[in-house]
Length: 369
Image (tube, rainbow, N blue to C red; front, top):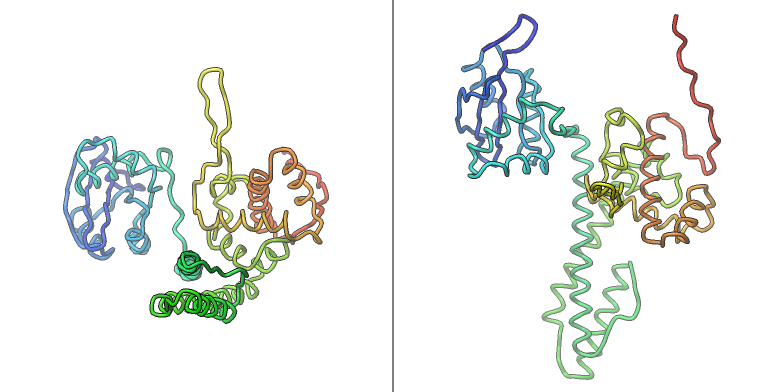
């Protein structure tokens, strides 16, 4: 084992975290396995084992980014260890090279990833607990909306079987109840079938979801208005408080992007590139990163182009020009991509949104002494 006075011993730890237990593997610079053990998924338990076997410390600890590993990373960092979580998709691809998938083999592979370091796989940014708490509300709302839509489509489908339908689109809970109950009465009068027993649970579920969604949206709106940055985001036509909070919590730390344009790739809004020999072509967007925030940005771009007609901006003009050239669907994704870059640039510079930004001269380079 090599070590220096100012560096940690050349020992790398791989953790395959589970809900209850974690497989741990330690290797040295020659990839020799030093220990392999299974222990509870608790940062304190892992720390105790490392102190027992490696009292002088370790170079780094790696694990796959997932719901069970985030608090472990934070706990080990609090104990002074260099702990990192790596991109789930990339780690999975690396581990697929092994023939047998076991927790022990996965821990061994992740230890190799930790040894290769950040130049080999992308490290995942670990957000603060406060950020996760706010984002959990967004996730809850997102899933409730999907459940509400699914439930209401089921109600409408059942009514169509009996020859009736809800003709009016409504976002109001009481109006939706009125239309459904009226449709049930129509079915009873025309066919003699009483759908109340089957429809009532679905209707109550839909109304309950609508109420909870409104409550969550109110909380998220209050957060956006109390946060100076999110409030400035909402000044952009089409960007709601939901989109502002979604972008804010997805990024959290803007300085981790070397360039503002990198955020578009991070959110999966850049096109894939297929290159082979002399042939190069672009495909659809990569759809990497968080799908919920990407949906919010595309929705904001759609509103900007199709709904917010009174708000004339340079971005909207550009988007409408692109829509004529490549179609509306591709244009709104292109606008969402620019929107993400603009929002990150607002964050980094502290400026407010400019509908028609002035062309600024680049900052002068420092003169050598």
